[in-house]
View 1 (tube, one colour):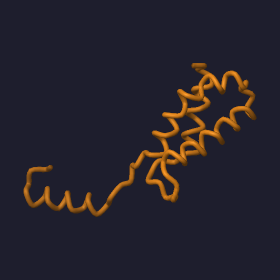
View 2 (tube, rainbow, N blue to C red; view 1 turned 60 degrees about the vertical axis):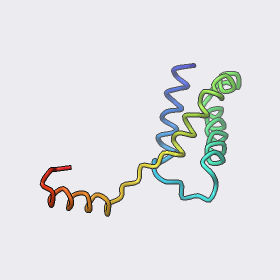
View 3 (cartoon, rainbow, N blue to C red; view 1 turned 180 degrees about the vertical axis):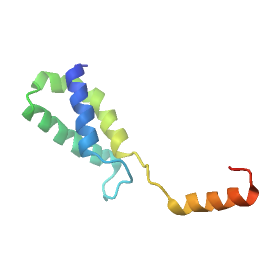
Length: 93
């Protein structure tokens, strides 16, 4: 894999796919496919060659799917409940 292309892909994913739940109706796979196509289009506009993009297409797809299906939501209610229980039990867990 081209290190220059990989760095660009990581930056693109970071800037264009925010972490969190999927608020869309589409599945994670459909969203990943749509965003992958947009990313490859942007890569061509950035000057990456078609052969370079095609060579990396299969390796990049799992990275995009991981980014789209990352559910890192923070549940404040669960945090408050766990804090209250820890204080009641005085065990800190």
